[in-house]
Length: 385
Ligand SMILES: Cc1cc2nc3c(=O)[nH]c(=O)nc-3n(C[C@H](O)[C@H](O)[C@H](O)COP(=O)(O)OP(=O)(O)OC[C@H]3O[C@@H](n4cnc5c(N)ncnc54)[C@H](O)[C@@H]3O)c2cc1C
Image (cartoon, rainbow, N blue to C red):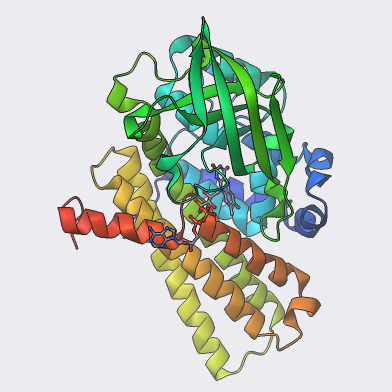
């Protein structure tokens, strides 16, 4: 059984208190994703604007019980993400901040790129994005068609991306593109969305609507050579390898969104179904146990990522696959406690069930996580115990 240390427990308590502020805003944001602009002063949103900015670029971190929190550790992030998602996963994902692209800039950026990226993020609340998926290349992202072509002293980016969170409101982001065939031909570049040829159109969605998924068009976008990430790294450490490493670091956090959504549904039933019968009580008890088991798996995966364990990616896949499944099962089960009209009578539960479906697709579907997990088991990268 993994226990949190005093420092992380203090942060967990703070995140739980902050999350209370999100609950009343959840349905407003679901109806109008642009409502986030009215709530930038909410404590959790302020924290997210700087979460993952490393100490050398963040002179003013959150301090709790004398401890400084930068959000650079995976365990710290999953503990935070679960609590925040109990408040509202939509608000968490709608917030400005560097989280997804920041993890990649940290892993792949040179000193000048880090300075450029983090100083922009620290100036004001800044949305960022991370564009890997394409209209015809989702699970098979490595087969992407977007190209990055040299043109004199710069590069030209051409193609389309789809289902990209926050891109229409972002100032900065990372785009993956191909310089030549094969996985080693994939490269990541930093983009300023004011560049000519960059457009991002919001898509209609039903779950996690705050995230504002978009379709991005890259119509001969000029990319200065110094915006190409990983030029100082070996060829094998750039591109797709870095995407996989970055996603491995982020995946336990996505699993924690799923856990938070499942817990929100469970707590909603406890708060609103005052006299459950015996069978309902048993179902709730079983769900409570599954939440505890999943939390342990997510913490285990997060610690493995922080410790650079070879099996970290596989554990992160196991956590994500189980979390998105539990989020869907828990939210549907919660609706079942309130009878046939539950989706209309309990709009928050209806929203949680729609959000849970969104988690299934983020960072790779359940099938893709299971394929990764089985690869680990078959090839010996992951032990059964
Ligand atoms: C809320 C949300 C946020 C997102 N944010 C981002 C973002 O910020 N940036 C970004 O780049 N992308 C983002 N995405 C896109 C996400 O990564 C893709 O939706 C995901 O990779 C799946 O791709 P797809 O939608 O094209 O589905 P497909 O790949 O077409 O999959 C459809 C179905 O086929 C199954 N399938 C596919 N291949 C296999 C296989 N080999 N074996 C078994 N089953 C298979 C899948 O499991 C799924 O059930 C987001 C998506 C959502 C819903």
